[in-house]
Image 1: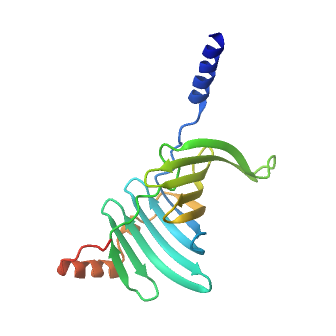
Image 2 (image 1 turned 60 degrees about the horizontal axis):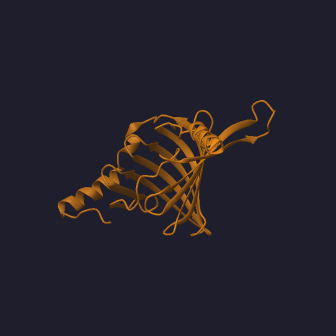
Image 3 (image 1 turned 135 degrees about the vertical axis):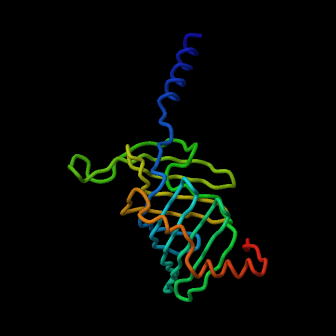
Length: 206
């Protein structure tokens, strides 16, 4: 009986000490390198991220083998719209979103996996502490991510699903806040494309 009580106290103590998901900045801008191993391509992006209003702007270079494509994409999750402008042809497609909003910081309800240092330990200015988190997400997604400690700035995200495979993102040159909120206004070409769709009574394509 005493052993059982002691075991329960250890379990309760460990649960109480387990860190809760930290709060990453809700709005920030950064450079992002995203790799999709299943489809064998890489994307280099300028990213503007607004978790509060569920909107993301990506200006990206996509490399598939020897081919390069350039896109300007705007995802407005509260409006269920995706604006995708081909920067070579200047043609814009307006579609409905096919994925839920993707958290770049610590995913809500994520599990704490540990804390460690990146860089040269013991050398001033050459090391940063990071926390590792993971979560199983509704819809068949698995998430694991790294954030700085204690500031909770995103460093790396990996998402996995049967539909999309492994998607690996690294973040750098991160700045807190959005310099110009007009970044979440659709490009002129996309506004014109959407206007034509409205005139023809066409809904965004899923």
